Image 1 (cartoon, rainbow, N blue to C red):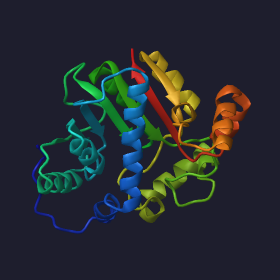
Image 2 (tube, rainbow, N blue to C red; image 1 turned 180 degrees about the vertical axis):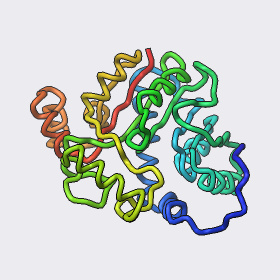
Image 3 (spheres, rainbow, N blue to C red; image 1 turned 90 degrees about the vertical axis):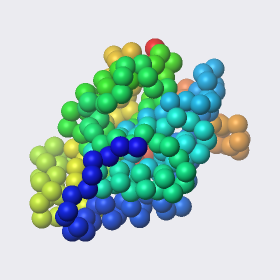
Length: 266
C-alpha cells in the first residue's frame, strides 16, 4: 500500500470527517454491494471471468468499495487524490487483513500499465473532474480487452440530483451553475457537503454511451443492466417496456437522479 505521508497540519477537514463517517454507513455499504453484484452479474451474462479479477477503484475515497472486492478474493487497486482519505483506507484495510494497492494520484494519469486491469469502477467521480474525457481515456487504456467499466455520475435530464443542496439544480442554466460552483469553493462549502472538488459536469446516459463507443467500448445504461429474474411480474413488464420503447426509456431517465453506465472494452 502506498500513500504520501501526512503533513503536520492537524486542522480538522470537514470533507474528510464527513466521508470518513459516510463511507461506513449501512446505506453506503449496501450501495457498494449492489455495485459489486451488478458488475459480477454483468460479467457472468457476458461469459467473462468473475474470479480473481484485477479491480481498480478510481476515486476510492476511504476504501469501502475496495474492501468488498478484496473480501471476495480479488486483486484490488485504489486511487484517490485526497491523501487523508487514503490514509484512512490504508488503516482500515490493514485492520481487516487486506493487501490492497492504494495510491495517491489523479484519474487523468493512472499509474498502472496498459491492459493490466479487468474491472474499473468510477462511482460518482466523473462530475468532479474538469478534463473528464482524459479520465475515460485513461480507464480505456488500463483495461484489458473484455474489461468492464462501471461508472455513475450526474444526470442532467433529471431535476433531482445528489450533488448540490439546491432544488432542481440539474436544470439550472450554465451561468447559474457557475455562480453556485464559485460559492461552493468560497463562502458556501455547505452547499456541496464541503467537497473539495464540487460537481462541474452534467451528463446524460445517452451522451456517456456515445462517448464510450468512440473509445472502443460497448456500453449499456442502468435499465439494460437491471437484473429482472427476482422481480415481480409488473416490474419485469415495466423494465421490458422501458428497454423496448425509446420514449419510455427517456422518461425513465428523466426520473432517475443519476446516470449509470456499464461498458465492455472491445
